Image (tube, rainbow, N blue to C red; front, side, top):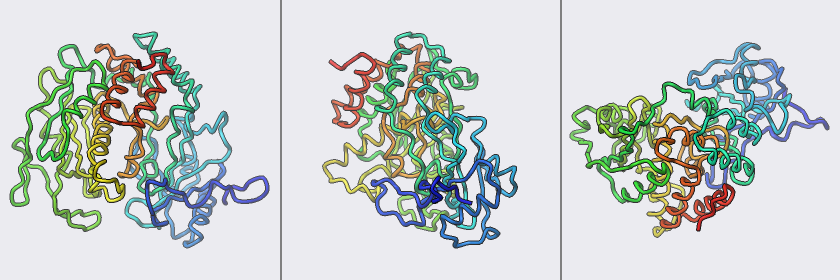
Length: 448
């Protein structure tokens, strides 16, 4: 049964989700449904509530409901009341189920088709509530930072959390990241204690960009400058360009075969420009990190894919091998299919989008996972429209992780923000410049 309000009506949070304006016109079939159920609901009650928001197009017995556990990609059918209890639980991360200052007796679920587009197979994911400032402040108290000033800066940013950092949006489109995946939080202390994360040393610290041809219309020097500003204090450099060779429908890179396709199995559509498999590109790059290098990030305008279920893949990184690759191909405003930017704005938009993805992938190679605390550069994204909504800045939690990872390089919160502010001014990133200026004022280091 659907959860009811005190006056007997259906909870207003239930129904068809409204997508953000920049998603454009979206068919209702592509919109998630929001369902509100009691924590003690049974399988039958949850399915009935789900079918109500689908206007009872189906019978309960004709629909299979699925769930995912934290950090798992496997789908688990929700067929017993015990599975329902697991679905409606936020354990072992109860902080994600806290709404305001209390744990509600109701659970809000996002529901949408499993990615095979069959509405008889529905995936339910509990929404994540915004992490309160007190929880983030407590988490910062558990991490050991070399600089007391950085700790103070991070607490100051937490003190203005509502002003500076928007909550992670609840998923609304069936391809949105959190409509399909349930990721665990990674606190700064958890990051610090992770013995398996890559650690830069004094002799193995440089971040390299690798141009992988073709690389049309991309300002590699500007991208390098942004990486240097974001990872303030870390040495950066560009390797000599390489090319993935494609002949007679077969591709090689660094002497290795790389799967190449001109038809997308997911939708059966032709991909005339061709796509290279990102995972195979990373495998070819595994011995490419120079002796003084911490990581190598390949950049290209060649379109990529990762698996047969992908229409495309923007980027991929390997923490183990400290290699990553991402493609600008879908980022160009003439190819994204929806932004409608005037030609004079194309170059700036392409650079802004590329900068954000480059540092996201490099941060993965330092061991940062996707962020679930606030809107943050480390949020996951399931499609381009969602990707373009992600901000350039890091939340206080992810910024604390960089303080841990980059302490040997003299990285500081104020230095990071100052370097970015100067970059944003130079390259006319107006929104980012305004945000960074406010953040610098909060940490007591206003830009002169």
